[in-house]
Length: 146
Image (cartoon, rainbow, N blue to C red; front, side, top):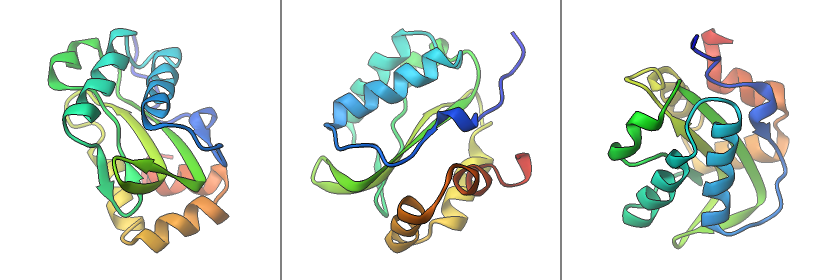
């Protein structure tokens, strides 16, 4: 199978209503599976990973991804993006931006670099969530790959 585009614009869902953490993780996993990035089994790996060690990285961002033992279930590197303007509780932390990740090798590092470069503070994240549109989110995450 040819490598898929790492982020598809249809996988950027803005202004999502509140939900619980596991439901959001499963939704990210379902989107990754439906887009052909992962096999179904990867979704359980995402839930297990967050239950064993929170995937909230600070600055109001969560990056749910599967545990190492589920790497074999990744077909192609991909990410999905959901924004929650009202915020959600993520194991005691407030999260507004959720980026589900399935990564083969280091193919996701450029996108992670763009997150770090463009979303240095929690205020940057809140501004993107409240004012951003799909194009802005896509360009911010994909940078030169867009």
